[in-house]
Image (cartoon, rainbow, N blue to C red):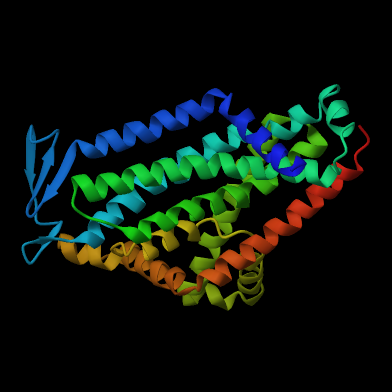
Length: 309
C-alpha cells in the first residue's frame, strides 16, 4: 500500500505542474482541429465545408483509402504532436521529480518512513510512467474518436499507440533518472536525455545506411560495430514504424504510387528502410530496448540506494 501511495503521490505531483495542463490543451486543440476536417471520396472538406479541396489521393474505387487516413493520423499527427512535442514536454515535466525529492528536508522526511529506498525510487519512476500514460490515452483516445465519428474510419490498431508512446518515453526517462541522481540537476537531466535521443536515432540511421548500401559494407569493422550498438541501445525510431504497422497505415510505396510520383533514390531508400524495420519482430526490438532500460534503471536504483543524503 505504501508503494502504491508513492506512485499516486508522484502522479499527483505531475498534476500540479503547468506542463500537464499545456499537454492537455494541446491534445484538445489537435482533436478540435481534426474535427474541423472531413474526408469524402475525391474531396476534403475544411472548416465544416467552408473550403473544399478536390483530390484523388485519398480515394480508390470510389471509396476512401483507410490506410492513407491511418498514415495521416499516425505519421502526420500522432508522431509529430505526441511522439515529439509530447515526449519532450513530458521529459521536462518529470525530470525534476528526483532532484526535488533529494533536497534536504524532503529526502529526510521520506527516508524516515518505513519504506525501502528502492521502493521510493520505483514509486517516483512509475509515477512518471503513469503521467505519460494518461496523456497518451487522452491524445490517442480523442483522435481515435474523431477518426471514427467524424471521418467514418475506425482504426482499432491505432489504440496500440498508447503503450508504444509510454515505451518511447520510458526508453528516454531511464537516462533522465540516471543523470538526475548524481547531478541533482533538472536541466542536466533534460539536456543529456535529449542528446541520448539524438544518439539513439543516429545509431539506427547509420546502421540503416550500412544495411541498405553495399558500398558501405566493405568497412567490416564499422559495419559490425553499428550492428552491435544498434541492438544494445533503445530502438526509439522503431516506435513509429510499429505504430503505423499495427494501425495498418499506408507505406512509402503506397503513397508514391497513389500520388503518381516517380520514385527517386531517396524514396527507394525510404521504402527499403520501412520494409526492413517493419519486418523486425516487435518482441525483438521492444525486448532488446527494455533490456537496456532495465540495466540503466537498476544502476540508477543502486546509486539512489547507496547515496549518502
